Length: 188
View 1 (cartoon, rainbow, N blue to C red):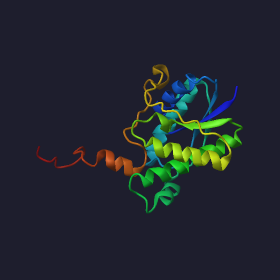
View 2: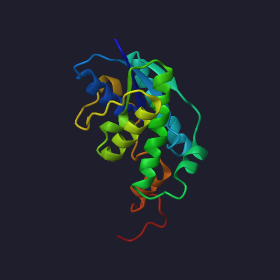
View 3: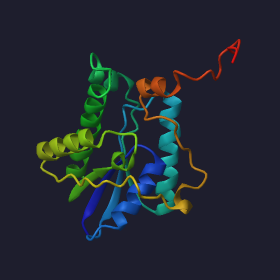
């Protein structure tokens, strides 16, 4: 059975990706790759990695992890391009480029990403970054629109579920209009 490297950024999207992959006509042996220099702050990065490791354990999958917290690498990659969609295009290229390289090194037949399950990500940019990485590394990128896939409940039960994409800019976009943790609390 050919091996498929799955770039994973969180446990819930990994569960959805496994569902999508299982529905493919060709059977694949999933190999999960963690490489996310975009996720900040450090405790958020650790929460997501821990949840991915717990899902991997539950599912009995292989994990290849780059456990280097990548704050500086990510900041350098997006510096001067902090606005959407430029920031996202650079972030996808950074992560999918690394995933393609690891897929080739691990002897995988192809690679994909949990990004393809998100309703909040730019799928055109994901596909462009995946195809560019595939061409660069000589390994196919499997793009599927798995936004409607559901994660198996037994795999994601009680696992951390994040509230924003991952980077500090997306955290700001997510929470900038909230009054949570403001003191004194504004009059409503």
